[in-house]
Image (cartoon, rainbow, N blue to C red):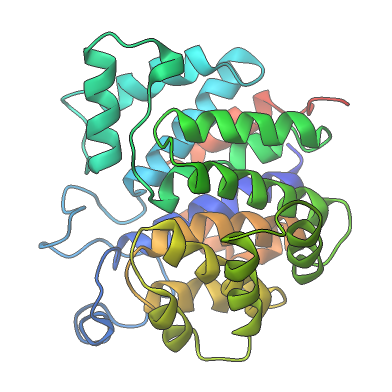
Length: 307
């Protein structure tokens, strides 16, 4: 397996697993008091939305990302039909995890017999765009195919245009980093060339402008919540501030509270593209309960889609 490229996926999912222990805790004082500094993978608190999970597991976002990776491995490329089938199989009644609004609404639409082209919740949560690391890994030599697949996988559960465009934005940023750009320069160029419009121009400017600020303060100002309007500038902040110190960036992301999993999945993906497996501590990877599945799928996808 090409571990430097595989880091795109591993760093993304490790960031999600790191977030699990404090995910959706909005009171940062509670994180400090009840969880502590999250620099290793932790089990969620008994009161967590993820209380059925254990240390080394993924949030529901991470689980869906692994499903996408499995679907790519099964199909040898992105098949919306295969992804939809495997996604439904994961999130059926016996799923050992949390089902958010977007998941419940999308499942209901499938149960109603809607066509796949008409499926997708109205959710504006960034989480729908955060699953794309497997697509970036597989289509790393074909940016157009990467972006198209990132849009389609997002729209299956989140039909909000800002969320879909966010998937395209961060896919293009990661592709630019793989092409040799530094992450901050990639953020600036992708924004200027393809997203020089509201609300993205403002979100990128906010995130980049905050890179000298304390992360808790910056994310607290943007908003800790799931909505793309809060999460997007938070991801930009993390990438710009920590491109040369991704480990600390992913830790501070969790310590900032709220929807740290969605932010971490995207920031981790970019960090993995820039730093390879050095982006994250090896114990984070070793402690992933899904490590074997991830490695098997990546091995099956060693030869990327050619241009």
